[in-house]
Image 1 (spheres, helix red, strand yellow):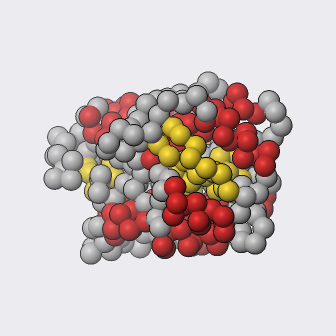
Image 2: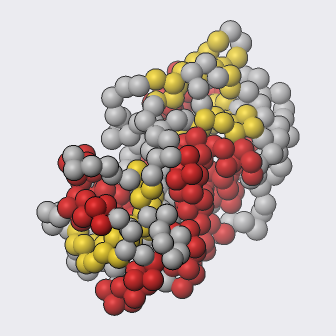
Amino acid sequence: MSLPANQTGCPIRVLIVDDSAVVRRLLSEALSGQPDIEVVGTAPDPFVARDKILELRPHVLTLDIEMPRMNGLTFLKRVMHYQPMPVIIISSLGQAGCSASVEALRLGAVDVLGKPHGPYSVGELSAQLADKVRLAAVAKVGRDAAAGRKSGLASPAPRAASMGWCRHVVAIGSSTGGTQAVEAVLQGFGADCPPIVVAQHIPAGFSRAFAKRLNEALPMEVKEAEDGDSVKAGRVLIAPGNFHTLLKKQGSSYVVTVKDGPLVCYQRPSVDVLFGSVAQVAGPDSVAVILTGMGSDGAQGMKRVREAGGWTIAQDEASCVVYGMPREAVKANAVEEVVSLGQVAAAIDEGLKKQSRPSAAVSLPYQKSSAI
């Protein structure tokens, strides 16, 4: 993956903030040798980091959560208020670390990565961290991201009522910036929401904390998907990190299959895998939604959903943190409707109503959005 650091083409300047000297060294070594990335400094705590941000003007910050003198969440809030910039959380995989990382994503961090352990972590960390830095460098954060999320909110999303969604299913795919976007979409529904399955690019371990936080904050049931879970009204299933999640027909209803498998579009869970199964199993009784994220995952799966008679929706560029996945879906002629994040829930509701009509299997011509 090769992405510009900024409009001038200069290397992406990275500041690493972690109280562990070993982790600071591992992260620095993981990024060394990347011609488009420069580690301009490291800091053992937020107070040193504050001074180095002003001195070194980094483009991207990597941030530990558990640090002396000031924890990472408190520091992240201050960064997003006073000096907004893309932040990648480097966190432990324990329950507390995963929960704090999900909260950091809600506060504006653009991505999360499990903390490396031991001298053999550098090789496997290098490509993954470098790609996350490149993604972060092009993400909209702070005031720009907030303005985009607010666009289109003049018409509030409906508190959608259940219409007996026994044969319908909604599939949502997202990546960078997706945890906030998914939550914003789900806020448009009540406890009797339609059956929803989400494939969010998120590391193993963090998906459970993400589902748990949504379950506590929203009126419907939200859980990390397990093999054989039923897909039903009032329930949202989140694909577990590092596993593919597929829709499967069981009698007159749906369940999910959770399984291992090769990376698809460099991802597991893959949106393409979820959408492809939805196209095959639910076809004209489905709505597929692609939200913010870098790359092309989901474009071909969404095209299959559309060709099978399902309704397809993409988030618009203005409200995306990274307008990559929706753009690729539009380019693939896979999208029926492009809307702002604030209008996605209403678009899903209308899409389900369209799919309930006898003529739902007829694909409508794509109308290009003015936002593209």
